[in-house]
Length: 77
Image 1: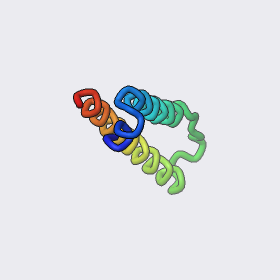
Image 2: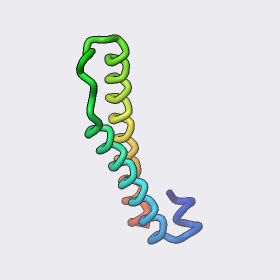
Image 3: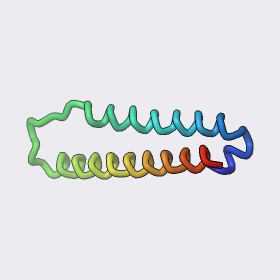
């Protein structure tokens, strides 16, 4: 974030970071809204898929928090 703000300025870096956060949010929303096939909900494959989705959602949330912190640091520089 600091490198980006040095190259393009604080305002442009903040806009780029906000766009990244919005993209992550859109991906997370798409994952939450994707319909699931519940016909074989007890299969090992579905359990693995569910675990992967939980992990992906968790990672998206962590990255969103990190980006928000980066925006805050840029804004206070």
